[in-house]
Amino acid sequence: MLNILNLKRKAFLSVYIKNISLIKILFVIFMIGMIYGAMLIGLNRDEAVNQLGSIMQKFINKRIEQSIFITFASSFFSSMILVVILFLVGFFSIGQPIAFFIPMFQGMGIGLSTAYLYSSKGISGIIFCLILIAPTTIISTITLLLGSKESIRFSNKNLRTLFPQKFDQNMQGELNLYLKRFSALTIFQLVSAVVDTMCTFLFARFLG
Image (cartoon, rainbow, N blue to C red; front, side, top):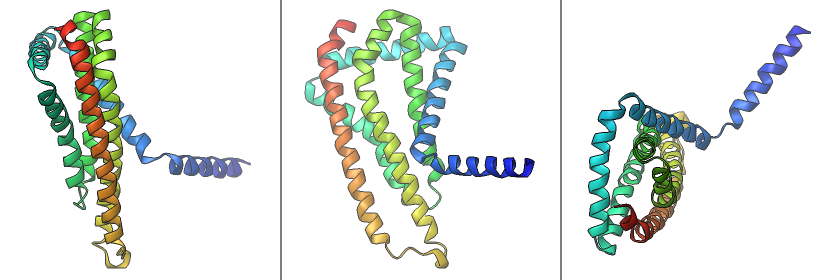
């Protein structure tokens, strides 16, 4: 009876593990980064709040003074840096650790900024996050998670080509698919930059 239960438990765990998609794992890593970033503010509250406060105030003031085009270009290129890194990492057979780390890095940045705003401004900080940070952050985070997934997948494909018995004859097709998917992710980042620009010019001047 115990043997049957153990077999059923192992079978259940095996099916459960197989059904855990890579995107879910990446999302968990992102959330860990976000929680860690928020904890850094809590552990070093006074020093961190003062430093971040100065940085973010300068950032907001600069955004208010910029033209729409410069704001859009700045938002797009700053958000594309991580996407480009993920794209390049995919061509390396051992690039998976970097692709796994980038969602955590993104999460840490969001955790730091949102925890600072809540610690320093209370309810108004939450409102700031909702109207100025959340819209573009949601889009860019989804883009990065998808980019990390594609980067890891393509990196694994490149790793398999190192072993003759597992050589994939269709790498050209995989490369074409990889390029198409990252082209789509670039469009997502363009949309994110547009949303960021609109939110900045609609609300940033009230928060400066």
